[in-house]
Amino acid sequence: MKCTKCGAETEGDAFCPKCKEPTDGRESQASDKEAFEPSVQAEAEPEALPQEAEPVNRSDEAGLQQQEEPAQKTADGASVPAAAPAPNKKFTRILTAVIAVLAVVSIGALACVKLTARDPKQVVIDAFEHVWTEEQSIPSEELFGRKAFAESVLTANSETGFTLKMDSCSDPEINQYAGSGLRFQVKSDKTNNKSSLNAGVIYNGMDLLNLNGYYGDETLMVSVPELFESVLTIDLSDGLGERIANSPYFRSLMEENGVDVEGFAAYLSEAVAEAKQEQKEGKAPFDVEALISRYKEGCKAQENFKAALTVEKAEKGSYTMNGREVSCQGYQVNISKESMIDFLRTSSDFFLQDETLKQEFLRQMESTVRMTEIMSGGSSGANVLSAQEMQKQSYDELEKALNDMIDYLDGSLTDIQMTVYVDKKGNLAAVEGFTQLQPEDAGEEDRKKVDLSFGCQLQGGSYLLQNFKGNITLRQDGEEVQIDIVRQGSYDGKKLTDDISVDLNAAAEAYSFVYGSSYNSETGSYHTSAELSDQETQFVKASISGVIDQLEKGKSIHMDIDALEISALDNSVNVVLSGEYYYQPLEGEVTALEGEPMDIVAATESDWNDLGTEIVLNAFSLISQTGISQY
Image (tube, rainbow, N blue to C red; front, side):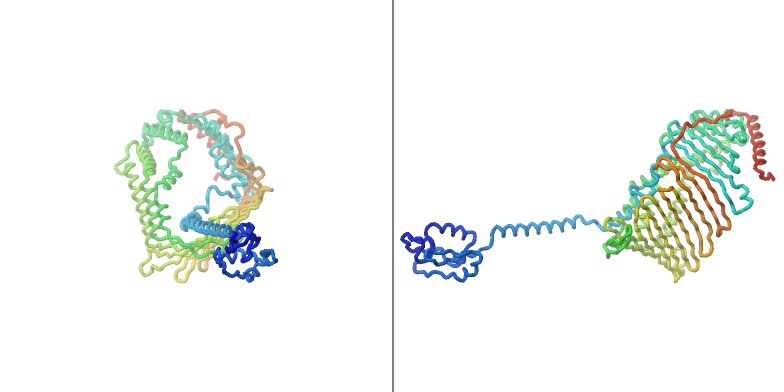
């Protein structure tokens, strides 16, 4: 039997007499171990040695690893050193895989950042466009629901009242009428297309005169009970023109003044029918919102202007926003003069060429020309232009005025350089800019450039513009004009404040405008004031204070006006007023006026004379009650 290690004859011994290795099968265990942890001997020697080969001395290697692997013992007590540990191939494979994954993730993350990094130009454009949006919440909306109020006025059945009386005046002659004032009340029933009006004159705390109005069932009614007993009425239903043409009083009156009666009747009928149709469709003679929509959709002025901007990243800056310092990315922005002029020309061309606007304007011109012809007895005269000629003349004049203005700006403006700062949320934080103006209307020798620098900081709060600082500075030949604007506001969920100051300083002159307001939702108290002054004189000041004692957000409000004070020239002239205002859902019904109706179209000349006499006599009676001199 031969040793599997050295090939020597073992003669059945448990250990090889030559290499001292076990021969009873334990070599398989060793070989298994060596497969995982190859020994130094396996690396240094061939697997089978010739018989005359000397045993290898591995004491040095065994000594290095004796703390890791205990030495194996031979039968005669000789120790055999344990095999040296080799690198863990499984661990190596795992480590390699981890490194590969990290490399892939790093490269992917870098690529993702590059792909998702926003274009600096778009960042700046978005920041400006989001300075004010309809979606953002502001305190006045949260407290009062002003959007709901605005919608309610247009669509809901409601009533509004307003009273204002004079409490005192610095002028003694006017002060004798203290307690006098005006009162208005309007009721609107949108469901039944009815409305009513009461406008009253108050004298010494009492009603002196009332003007009442009513519209419903295509009938208009007016009365002034203190001046005449009748209720003046006019039927606005179909056939109004014909009824006026057949009126015993109005027909003769129009004929005496050379009016084309039949033409006027036809014109009036068409105008009333057109007004009813526009009311039914909810259209206005000039639909401004539709015009703006057409401009946004069909005009390339804004797109071209944005495309012409050049934007590059600049150094970061630190600014105060929402009460704390934030780091903001800077962007260098250049607005070329050519892009500004192109924007103005493209926009003006759009409005001048908009066919819908032209047709609306032409319709107004046609109405004007037609009325002129009617009032002149059906003849327009040789010098009267047609509607088309009037439209062309108006458009030509407007186009010339716009071109002159744009040409002036073209010769006066230069490029605008700005540094724009945007916070991490994409909000505009600050703008610093500079340009030069060169007045074109000055002579060549006097055309000295004006340096114009400007800046603003949007400091946020409940919304971006609640706190704001801005400035504009003009410099020429050592002279300087500076305008500073500061807005400070606060809102804690209960109390709202807003203060604005505008200061203009030019050489030895200085002017200031100051506005301030506050409202406390817990007490309902409010105060608002505004004043204009220079360094020496307060030109005018107005303030109002009181209490909002009833408030249902977006539906109803009642406010007492405790004092509305207006003063001028350092308070040398002042007047104090008081009153109330309310808006609420309609209570009750809107009813027709009571009294004997007088159809003003069917009335005769005698009826009108009697009415005039009644008005004059009652007017003198009212004047005598007030003590006002009639001479």
